[in-house]
Image (cartoon, rainbow, N blue to C red; front, side, top):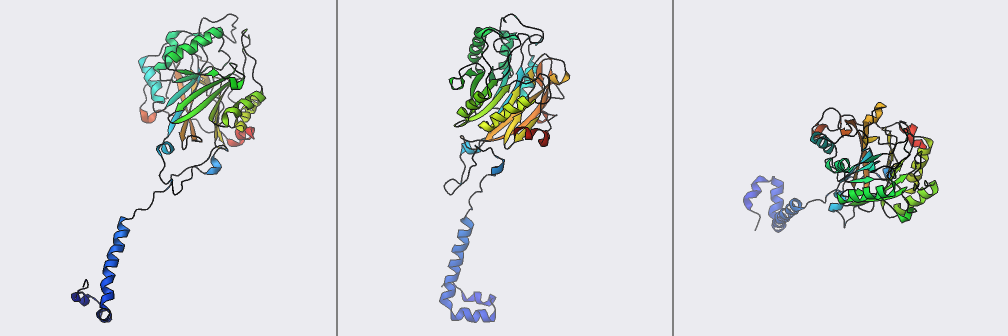
Length: 383
C-alpha cells in the first residue's frame, strides 16, 4: 500500500474517517497526482510567431507570412535581415581629389553593415567628345579616380543618366568593362525594355534576396551626342516595370527633374505615380544634386532625390549634403518585407562623411537624420 496510516494524523477527523473507509481509492490518488505533475513540468508551449507588420501597411503585391501548425519555426531565410544602401550622384570629374585613407575609412563606416552599396555614376572614362557647354559640360574621369569607388566600398553603379555618352558608346562600354573587371557591377540595357541605354537593369543579390534595380533616364543633354537614344514615353516605362514586377522585387531609379530644386515637379510626381502603380517596391530619384523629401506611401518608400554622393560642387550650399537611403529586407524571398530609413551626410573635400567628425564612432554615424515630410503635401501627388 502506498498510503501510510501515519499520514492520517495530518488530516482532519472527518477526512481520516473517509480515508480509512476507502483505502484502495486513496492509494491510487497519489500515483495519479505524481504523473500529472510530471507531465506539467516536462511540457513546453510552442513558440510564438514573429511579429510581422500588419497587412494594411504592406504593398499590394507583397504577401505576409502566416505560420501554421507545419511551419511553427521560421527558417533562416524568413528571419534573415539584409541591408541595401542607395547613394546619390557620383561625379568623379573636374576638381575631385583622390580620397585619403581617412576619407576612405569615414565613407566605409557609414555603410559598414550593408550587404550592397549602389550609386549613380555620372562620369565615364574619357576622353570626352566635343560640344560641351558651361551649363551642360561633358563629364569624364580617369582610371585612378574610378578605382577609388572600390576603396570606399561601393559594390555596384547605375549608368542611365544624361552623361552616359559623354565619351561616346565606346567610352561607356570601356567603363563597364573596367568596373566589372574590378568586381563592381554595372547596369546594362535589356531587350525587355526596347534594348536601349535609357532603360538599364542591374541584378543584385542582397543577402539571400534577389532584386532588380531598374534605372531609367528621362533627361537628355542640351547638346545631344549623335548616338543618344530617344527618351522613353510613360507607356514604355509602365510596360517595362510591369514586365519585371510580375515575378521579381523591383526597385526603380529615375534620372531626371530640375537641377537644384528642393521639391519635385508635377512631371516627377507623374513618373513616380506610374512606377508606384506598376508594382515597384521602392522608388528613388537622381539628378537634382540636392536632397529632397522622403515619404512612404502604402508601404512603398519614395525618395524624391538623394542629392550628391561624391562631387566637387560648392554652390548652392545644399549640394554639399547627400542623402543615404537604407532598405532592410526580411521575410520570404519571393515577397520580402521592406523597411526604409534615410540619413543625411556631408560632402567634405568631394567625399562623403558623417556629420560632426572626420572619423565618427560607430554609435554616432548619423547625427542629422532626415525628417519625414508632411504626408498631406507629398503623398496626395501619387493618388
